[in-house]
Amino acid sequence: MNDIPFDDITYLSLNAFRKPIANVRWYLNRYCNYECSYCWPLAHQKEKDFLKKEEYLITIHEIIKQLTDNGFPNINWGFGGGEVTFNPSFLDILNEIQLYCSDENKMTTNLITNLSQSIKWWDEFIKNTEKFYMTMINASLHNEYINTEEKRILFRDKLIHLRNSGVKTKVNIVLLPGNFENTKRDVDFFNEKDIFVNVKSCRENRKIVEGYTKEELEFIKEGNGYTKQNNDQNMYLKDKNDNEYNLRSTEQLLVSNFISYKDWNCTAGFQSVTIHKDGTVYRGTACRKDEILGHIKTGFSLHKKVEKCIQERVCDCVADLKMPKWK
Image (cartoon, rainbow, N blue to C red):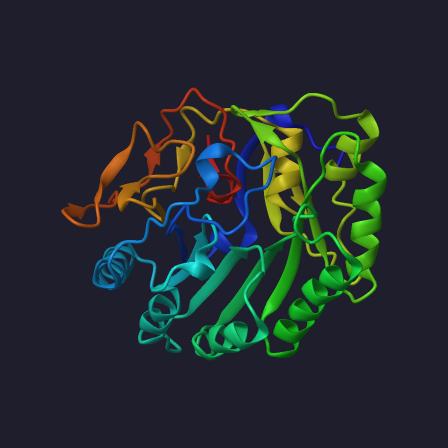
């Protein structure tokens, strides 16, 4: 990866989105049953902030219509929070999307979760996603709550149960500065069962927090949390001389090339859309304040063509970074 000339890169995309697949990033709520000390204040709250089920379901139909009109009949639905699994409408939302699943309209979904729901709840989740072309769980390990060996084993056993039921699984771990040895032990714990791990940096105020050693940053950059059995090259890059490069994850790209993509052509808002907990619809997460597309209660309109990025700020959201962009 040290050979990638990031200053000369002119195109990047997650490999999946180089195909006619759209991406919906939906932050259904900020309510969370955890309150981790390192979590961003805007990423969680104790007050329940759920919208009405009918508002969610109507939005599903409108999103599918607009993305299909833009040429994207296949859609990935990415859900995050807060802890989305405690939203009382979540399973109904998944089941509603299943109504559109067909050979012509492939729906996939991925969920960021702390995995605290019971096995019985996850069995309902499996049933409500059985028609999806692909389902993935991104389970965030929070050691402040998963703080005994019994809880660690249960956390891992849930992932194994989901994987045995056809759900793709991986673990997200935030490597906090100075916690390198514990992080490596956590990676080994999951690698023992062939569960691969995405090791992430801790970010605050659009920056990677200070205090990382060179070794810790290299561990993240090289994607060393992945198992040897899961060595997929997911992120595609091309430079000005048409040389091609691949990375395992957007997290690797973010740590290595923490920049703004202002004036690049970006498919966010055309091939993808971001919805926040109050129902506001944005072009993306990093660009949300300046590029509002509407609201699920009053109507919203996606771009009808690819638009240029207008943001001076760093593109610090991996969901935004996944989408095709070029200059």
